[in-house]
Amino acid sequence: MNQDLGPKGERPYSPEWYSSLERTLGKTACRQLGFFSIPDDFLLSVVIPIFNERDTLETMLSRVKDVPIRKELILVDDGSTDGTRDLYDRLEEANRDDKFNTIRVILHETNKGKGAAVRTGLQHVSGNVALIQDADLEYDPADYPRLLRPIIEGKADVVYGSRFLGDQPHRVLYFWHYLGNKFLTSLSNCFTNLNLTDMETCYKVFTSDVVQKIAPRLRQNRFGIEPEITARVAREKSRVFEISISYSGRTYAQGKKIGWRDGFKAIWCIVRYGLFN
Image (cartoon, rainbow, N blue to C red; front, side, top):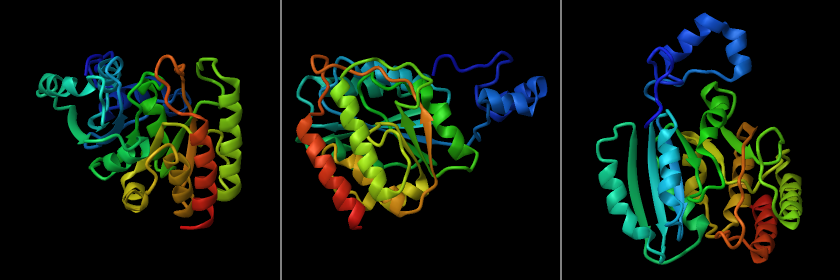
């Protein structure tokens, strides 16, 4: 972790850091500005599904590690063939003395799909909260504290990071992807009775209790994991919050992997998991 100290030497989001701000600004100002305290014994499990991300993985991991929260990084390589696997020994060695961020690498010998990698990662979390992070640079780990706040404050069991709530930077890309996402989210809402704006988001955050309930039951291997997770979260009557996030989407030339076939599979999953447990 690099930039980890506040103006008086406290680690951001530590109880000491928050107490100092509260004395200076007052409780109301701290609440309005989004300042809060994370317990010293808190551990965030970051599940990172990886497939052929050699060009972005190191930068992404550096950004994750810079977030001033104690973390375990669970890297699930889903059969990469572009040289990504050559990076892991060096990454683990470079991180050996970092007590604030631990790294664990799990290898799939063949490519099974993002859903399979997410399922594997969730089965190995040991933190208080688990968060899913893509290995590209579309999602910004700087949003972690905002995503965690409703859970830390005891208001939520699950938090979705929405690309469409509107007050964070968002790269303008494919209209038909946007329209398809809105359709899938609306259809999912019909079956779950949730009021999400972005069911397909990567940033899904869960308490350990929710992970223990849903992880053993997940079945989807590809992008159908998103509606399946949402349906199972809704079935558990979890308290769900949405937080706006920034988003810098990739083009297909830059490595974007989801396609129209995944959209049809998502429809099937919405109906399947919406109707049956």
